[in-house]
Length: 448
Image (cartoon, rainbow, N blue to C red; front, side, top):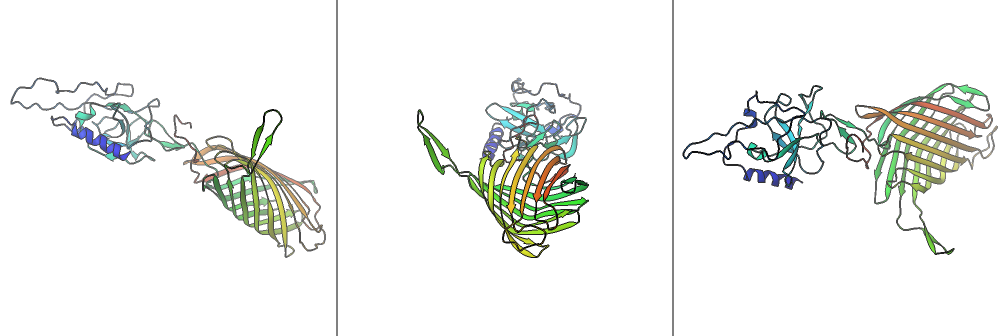
């Protein structure tokens, strides 16, 4: 692309007319101004002085270039991402007194899409803030005589994938990856415990760091650091995980194939898209009435099998199973906790605004010492469903609404009756560093 831009610049320089040119900044300030709706310089515009008769021995000075470039509006075309941007110095106008513009030119069509190099204010006048998130333009001196041969079209500067630029040159993000962010949130989180038939008025504070990156072909890695939930109010408690990591994969070769012979023979391929899931240092404090228990899972390792996943592996439905080594901090002994889960994670739209997750997980505590007031092999069952939608963005950082429903059945608390507890949670979450999704398209009118 750079070679093409340099070639274009050199071609323009070599084809410069023999008549010396007058710089755009020397154009008279009282020249007529071309407004938003005025026609731009056409590719067939006449060249002043070029065909006029010249007397022998008389030097004819070129006339000043009075062309006034119009600024873009909401209906103007958008500059493409391809190619190299050129820096242009055009005659000053009341809207762009510096005369500094950016252009992307098509040499074959003899056309240049031109945009101001600075952000415009609310009245359409040049400000002192340069365009953000644009590539650096190439400094090539283009004489006015050659620019007259090109059709200069007011345009809106390019924007990176997942971003949109308005007619004033301001840029905004409209595509977000909620799997790559630093998040801080809060929610109202009341809890109903069936055994006590009471309601605990609680508030939740949560934070964590989510990371995701592609690996080899057909593999996706995901990591969560410091995933923490603090419950304040009645029956205050917490749940925190230092590190959670998993990867998923997609294989081209089927694990096995099934052929049926009812009517015409048909072949069905069965794939085993397996992965790995791990948690390190998962701490949990559980409170029911006056009973409190603390557990610390040192490490959990599970094998995963995708039942379905999207083409980019970001959304999935899977099962996972495996053991964990847990420390019962209240009773001071170690246990082995095998578990299994069915879970799903969905990004519902291409721009990442709607996010849904669900999970069903069962655990059984084995190799535990005898504890008065609880069975020798306690069990746990957890249900969860959540929805998150981005409502707005502050400085291009999304603020989302979160809705969450949870249910837990367990009998691992000594001297506490086994039973269900339910929680409905609603709150807000602020995400820092939420870049555009890797599949984000280039903006066209603010939509992907």
